[in-house]
Image (cartoon, rainbow, N blue to C red; front, side, top):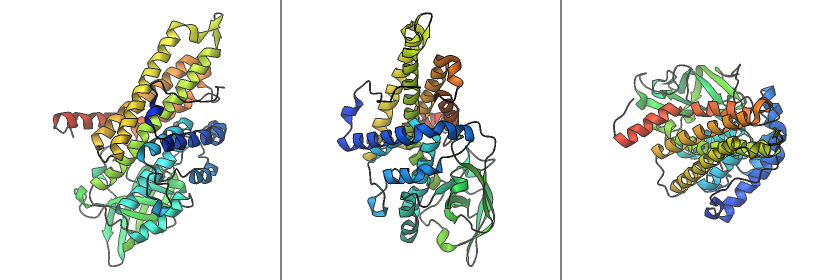
Length: 394
């Protein structure tokens, strides 16, 4: 097992953080050490999300942490929120995914596009962990191209009728409400996409666990099925309109991922350094060899660069200057970097690296999903290419 985690700050980034930001990070860090790390390995093996941690997450104030205090949220700035995501993913990507979906993909659209009544009904309960939400955008045949979705919402004299299927939905099976995106017009018109709040238990709505996952095993991943689901008019998020609305939500979530990936990389680096100091081979610690020192130096360099990216992105977001392309760069770089760190840690640990008592293989498997979801690495590459040339490859 590894030594107690004390952070990784080679460039004195703590000096760039406010006292509140450091306090938030340290509080969540201690909570992860005490509550997540002792159980997460077994949860991963069992393929179970640790729902017993939800009250603690709510008590910490991490659910919708950067939303206003008016609705029972913490009202933190975006750097503090990012540091929360960093520490949660240091524990496990599934824990960060839960909090990220709850806050950025469900609470955010309710706050951004919802009515006063919708906000009052859902946001305080979600901040307290008493209601769980999921985000229904991706479909079996439409992942990177959500504009092609087939889910429809037909307006009636009483409200709306929804039909369709959503896939790869985090929190789906335990959600009390789903934010479902559907086309209200012709199937070839993404401008007609609107968001709807679908409470669990609504007739015709079902959520089923995704079976056979080899990644994010300590996370609830589901399929959503909607068959003639009748909703009242007030189920519509009235401020939503077009593909831009769900993409705005994804920008919020991707921002958190860019921080979370750094946390996973930091966890792996800490495990690698601890192991390199204690593992004896050929009469000396393997950390004394140039080969392993080069591996650690490379990991340290890339994590530090990722930390700088995340911090500057957070400052831009707090200043209202952050762009989706900047988020694409950070998500793309930091997740790829974290994948590399997890893989290199696994290799440094040798055969021990595949054991569940160490974290690197779990992080490596999880990060392969993070590499793909909320915009694949390749799609973010194309987004950056378009940003620098002005020419769309889509």
